Image 1 (spheres, helix red, strand yellow):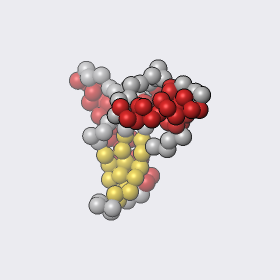
Image 2 (cartoon, rainbow, N blue to C red; image 1 turned 45 degrees about the vertical axis):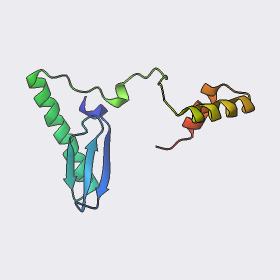
Image 3 (spheres, rainbow, N blue to C red; image 1 turned 135 degrees about the vertical axis):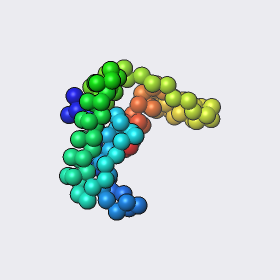
Length: 109
């Protein structure tokens, strides 16, 4: 299961090293002088954490890659933004859902 978790390597100017991170375990990190060593370190740390969880009977987090998404989520926006989006959707002749979905699909996170 360790291989399904989502890992990221980034540079830490504060530590002057690369940092290995795992999205499913936000409290864990691993510092190393190279990206490869940071990745190996965080993977090892997650593997050790999973082993500890197994021995204590804890349920490990489900990997993001293995989660099933419904395609629905609720977003609260100020009334003036809701109104502006509804007007734009009407002007374009599409539903509010289609307009917002199209806008979100162009977002780079």
